[in-house]
Length: 158
Image 1: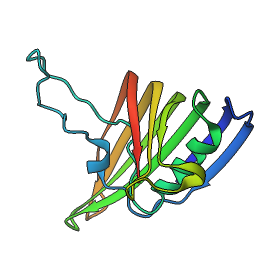
Image 2: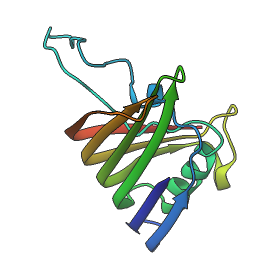
Image 3: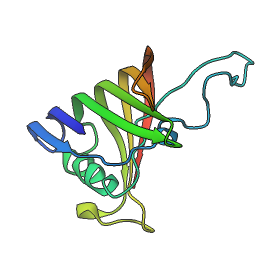
Image 4: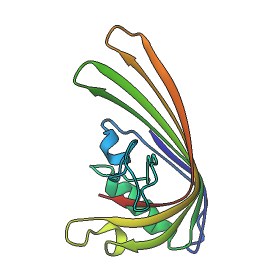
């Protein structure tokens, strides 16, 4: 489920709220190529979880909201929850809470019409807090982890 609330922006929308049911949200969507153990250009090890990168059948809906909000709009809080079963052996649950998400660029035509079959919105956010839990197939809980990141740029792609 993705819930967006407290929107205000150049379009004049205030108090906008929307909820999306997400059936499949693979963790690969959260990993833009830099994951635990990898090193950045300076050779410094880091873990980079999101950007807020959404694709699939719900992508156009998210893009349409960004389009309706307009460039410069702010989402005070966005929560994304995901459940994924990997190889039928492990169920993982991820919840990410984004703070002050801003629409900084839009591409995709008017009224949610795609450009070259794609919907794109570039977002920025001040902070994301991620809680990651899981269970094995016997129902035994796996160790939980919580992460926090600041000043990220996110891309919504549908």
